[in-house]
Image 1 (cartoon, one colour):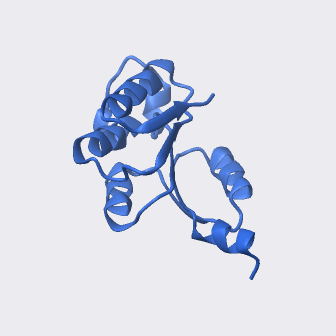
Image 2 (cartoon, helix red, strand yellow; image 1 turned 30 degrees about the horizontal axis):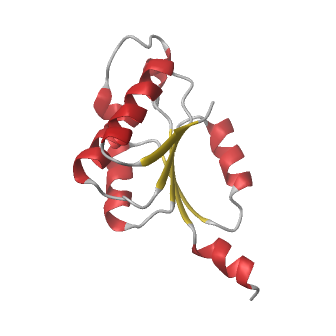
Image 3 (tube, helix red, strand yellow; image 1 turned 135 degrees about the vertical axis):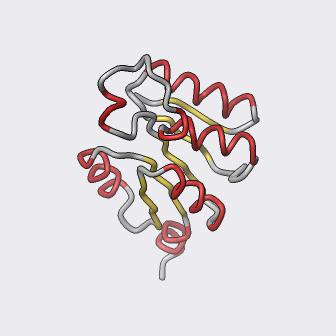
Length: 125
């Protein structure tokens, strides 16, 4: 097996996302990688406890009611819930974290929470 192919297969990626269109896009981008996908915060935490990820992609709004208003905080059921857990537990410290949420205030809160805990984090839109 070529080294590039072996390296690609060893990368582990966690994607926290609820929109099927985005999930399909991520799947196309990461063919050949080990990818775990969930939109459930307790499941995301369990996956982080059981695996070591190279990259973690976080969305903020993970349930339909989050799209109705961005003023309502439902931290434990949004991407902020996993960001908060990561920051408090310091798990997955070597992972690169990418926040890909369209929710401006939510992604900023997630970014600052992770950044203040020393994570390598960036925002993409």
